Image 1 (cartoon, rainbow, N blue to C red):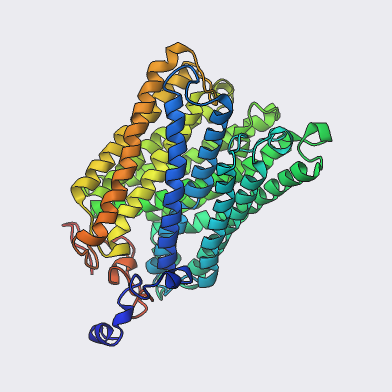
Image 2: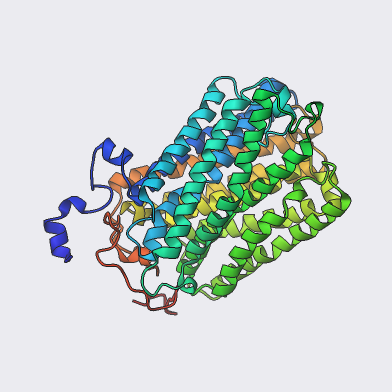
Length: 542
């Protein structure tokens, strides 16, 4: 199809945004790009709901006494913060938004393998969300986001059933997306695009999808068993009914530790793309990076027991899980060293996406290194119920996963919308976010070190200064999340057009117009070169 014909006869299909204006055309679309935008809207709503709970928690913790909410309400707040942020934001954020948008574009395909299944996954996600929100407005849940039995299955008087049903339904949304990605990456790559020419973002989506398909059914079965026990009184986990509560923890963490990698591997893929583009260099040790991604996915299934060092599992099991947990650090370290080597002597262009990538590398490294203390049997027994766990977890999940997500949004925003954004505001908000994040969570390392237990809403007076610092940081962090929303929405109407490839990046997604036409490419591209080939002077190889 020639370009002039494209602009003449087929003007309706100018790009995916204008292909059909009505709400119905969006709600019934099977275009992967539109479904990505629908996911972006849903996930952003849940992110701000979860963030609001976090803000209320931090307000309560400003003073040693419980003077804003009761102990019961506090339990409900941190449960719902965890449930919303982990199940409804962190797990789906990059695969459902950036993955949906980019997987077909990056491999030269017209769409995902199963477009209708893709739309269905978004509806399933929202149905799960409705159950969770129903529980929320109807009095909340107080079990903690881990739903530990027998409290959740027998004794809690809160809305356990709708939240567990919501999480159960949500799992199917993840599985549908993952199956779609695996089939698409195997079967629909452009001619010449062999496995070791794939962008690292595609490798990260592939590894994540494999984890989702293998691990999510386990949590689904676990939640179903919890519901059986709660609704029908069948003895599965409650010792009073002849059940085993440790069994629940094994099943739960067998899913939930791989789930940590579902949340972090996609960000690693994003950071690899950004670091290569803005240092104008080929990724250092490309094959090592692909093997490291897959190794993290494999090791993720072997370390769940490090969440259970104080639950009564045998010391021998603890020893094995501890050793395996240290082994996960090796592929993670390979990635950090290879990003650093890629940046070394590169022509680094300080644009917004690379600021997020720098933030990711620094915060993820701190989160990873502090994880070693929690993976060690001797220290974890003392640290596991302190604020060190909160700090470590948030350095990985917020410092890592959210930094990667926002970096990806800023990197591919011109491709998604056809518009640039205000660079000055974007850099300012990246800085605000970094400062706010560290001010929020670094004091929590110190709080944990001096012995403040987690999950309590009152605490001794001597911990107040650090808690006030943490709450001040949370306020700044909240601002850092609101500012991008404003300037990105503003950019849709008022900022300049992006052109096809505003970053001079390599990769098939940058060869089609911005925003892409409905079927992505006028002709299916043919791939001949290696990935990430940049000239030394900072010019792109055509």
